[in-house]
Length: 78
Image (cartoon, rainbow, N blue to C red; front, side):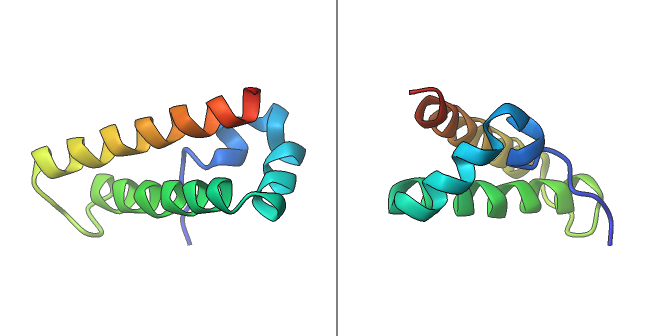
């Protein structure tokens, strides 16, 4: 199994404990983290040609991942 870049624990290593706590206490945060994880996997599969897709679709997924990451960071840094 290959390593998937951009996992939340790598993106925000300083918030690892807080992420774990929020996943347990906040359904909203848990949903965002799960959605980020799924979108990130889709981007990785597209980038590595495991599941090739049109460039526009891949760019949309990257934008969605960035928006989720921004929202997650806002919750973590609050």
